[in-house]
Image 1 (cartoon, rainbow, N blue to C red):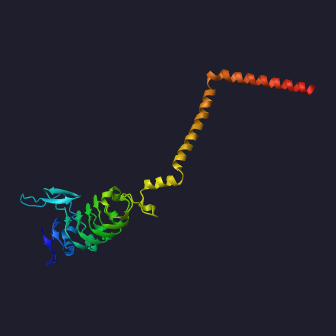
Image 2 (image 1 turned 90 degrees about the vertical axis):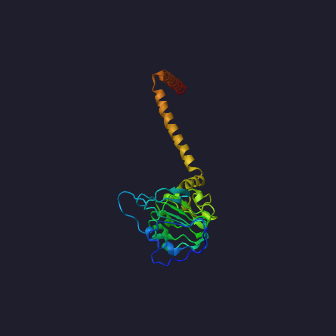
Image 3 (image 1 turned 60 degrees about the vertical axis):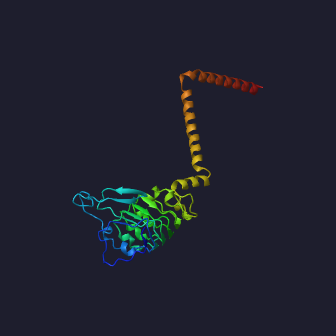
Length: 279
């Protein structure tokens, strides 16, 4: 039931060890707390330590928390020290995403859904190389979906629905695994997996669809090729079968009969020709 503004931090580096920043399901109406987000240093530096995974908590005490992860509410009985997430969903935050959002290179999940955020999705999001889920649904984001999001190879869940995004949906990599639910509610968005195709551009149409369209435009070229191949194979098989049949012993009598008949006809023709010549 929190409401009102989130003031800027007074400390130089507040919450330097904070790994889960969750203000979701309140009634906060301030601009997006960018200054807080940009000082979450624990989410900026990737933990490169090798060895056994560690959990938060000491002296036998284990922290637990409820988080919205990949669209599902899940209770983490134990929290890995490498787990980091930001959830400011279901508030009334306004403003735009800062370019510096790409500095949070250790971030696993980002949820700004159901707010009044506007502007565009910054290309710097390509730097969120550890990001596994991204939910920006039910806002007022506009312009195109940046192609840089294709670089987020760890991304398993994406929800950009109910915004004002326009243009083609990027194709390739993990984007080919997202269904239409990730993009619905953007009237000017087009391309796979939506039913709306992008005019004057074959890049936004899946390869299978392109083949089907080419098939129609060229009068069913694939179908005619299959028919011609069938005719060719049939002709070869027929000729081969004829040779096999004529070469078998069961039809030797037919060959001998035709030869005798031919010899008789030639003899008769010669006799008629000789008689005509004597006359």
